[in-house]
Image (cartoon, rainbow, N blue to C red; front, side, top):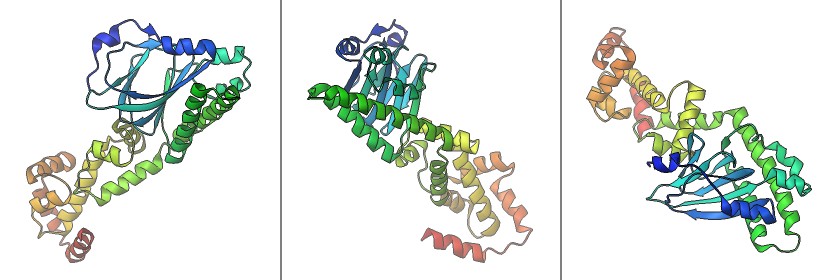
Length: 307
């Protein structure tokens, strides 16, 4: 997906829809089904919350670009130039909630002080991957906010006020959970899957889709938890497994081993193996053969796992 540089360099415009909405009430919300567009960056008062429901989109916030996928939340300052851009080949569904915190305090709304729980006045944006249960909760609250603002039934302002306060608390909890646990469980699950499926397609895109996160998010997690890129970790595991097989299964050809650990050819296997260990697979096998390792037990276990 390529972004139009002319749109990004153009002066930002005011978001008239949100600003007009704030004139009647300092909270604005809507459900969007967006397609590709050529809108310029824009600004508005307050804070904007974007919950991605379907599809993917690129959010430009100031000089940053962040991809959004289902189950992700993006909170940004409305004062910073921002815009959402959609891949021309797809549609993007989201719920967006905007609120003017100063307007809420001026109006004397009871929930206004609770909005301070969102630590955004001194930062540009916060992107959070929501756990499934929290995603369902926030999705329901955002939907209820939108409906109340549109339908304006008796007591709608009280409902909006209370729901926005709850939404702020849930978002902060998600931020803290993300910061505290670093998604170690997700990385562990991903690593466990990789170890058991080395011959399969372990591309970054396929793994991100399987675990319902963005590729960018998965890259950051692996870099933080494993001190390696996702691609480096996969290669490391494939080389490690090939070392075991070279050491313990002298009757398997290099091509057989290459396929067994996920390399498309013996040539690529040899290149990666040498870059990692400093020797070719055949040299490694020759050195290990001198140790006289019996492969019968290992071979039985390996083929049992393959069935």
